[in-house]
Amino acid sequence: MLSFLYRRWTKMKNRVVIKVGSSSLTADGIIAHDQMEKLTTQIAYLMRKGFEVVLVSSGAVAAGLGKLGWEREGLLVPQKQAAAAVGQGLLMHRYEQLFQCEGINVAQILLTNEDIADRKRYVNAKNTFQTLLQNGILPIVNENDTVAVDEIKFGDNDRLAALVAGVVEADSLLVLTDIDGLYTDHPKHNPEAKKLDVVDIIDESIQQMAKGAGTKAGTGGMITKIEAARIATLSGATTYIAKGSIPWVLKKIFLEHENIGTKFLPAQKTLKNRMQWLAFASKPLGKIFVDHGAEHAIYHDNKSLLAAGVKEIKGDFCSGNVIEICSESGKELGKGVVSISSAEIKGILEQEIRPKGIIVIHKNDLFIH
Ligand SMILES: Nc1ncnc2c1ncn2[C@@H]1O[C@H](COP(=O)(O)OP(=O)(O)O)[C@@H](O)[C@H]1O
Ligand SMILES: N[C@@H](CCC(=O)OP(=O)(O)O)C(=O)O
Image (tube, rainbow, N blue to C red; front, side):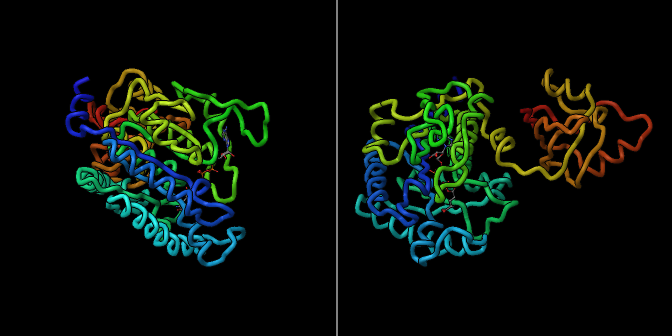
């Protein structure tokens, strides 16, 4: 309750992250200017009503392909990156023009996973967002496609939007797409599939309903949207998936509270900001395999991980780095920030009688799935 009041006090406004997918911004593979215009009019309306908005916009690749006259099919990664480099400028130019007419200044934020995997950069990004929002500026975010290769990619803008919702401590995340919500199965393949209005817990049964993308422009389909909803709801944001082409969709959802999409309720137990970063944004630099006793202690008893319970380690890491914690059989248990280096742990493992009570990961630095 106190943390909620603190958030309210520091933010005061209703903060929303709106993610718009390529499928909602393009028609026949190129940028649909009328759809962009409808979106910007609605965002401006919402901002005038007192909302703070962050827009996560896809569409750079599509815009670039349109400009260059390239077909998406068969393109290699560097060609897609080149198209994104052409398209991102066009996209921002258009947004800038449209929001200027509404009297709103915009800012471009391009991110890669690496940017926020590093705690310092994460905090820097947080401060920048905060400053922009406090000054009534609309941040427009996309993945930095020019440099994003597989290891540093968010994978999809749905996930990026969910992480951004955590960074800015948003009250809500809205994912706008070409379908009006999550169906019990892929609606294109199963005519019996039904839309869900409200989801209170994202469990395996919900995850299994989500399938891949429905168009060539889209990436990830419903799978990445549900993963985004999981991350955002664990960060405390109510999450919506809705159809971008519904007239005044933003007003209907945020002001009239109409149930026109699928609404995912925030998790009962949400993660604090540092834990969100550890759980979803940080990048592990190694692995620690633990024995059954340690697994039980950290999993069920909320205890710190002691050196006595470590079976094996992989990778070189220093105190303060993030590592992945695995069971003896290799099952991923969670992540943690280590208090001692891999060299020190190796030294301990080599000793016949291990010194007692040495903390490898403090319980406050542990995230368990
Ligand atoms: N269970 C499901 N419910 C609704 N849509 C689904 C489901 N499984 C897969 N999809 C597909 O996901 C598509 C939306 O994702 P995507 O094409 O990646 O759009 P975007 O470009 O907006 O991210 C839908 O059009 C639909 O074809
Ligand atoms: N960064 C890419 C978008 C990647 C992506 O996630 O697309 P989408 O599934 O349409 O949201 C672009 O701007 O084209």
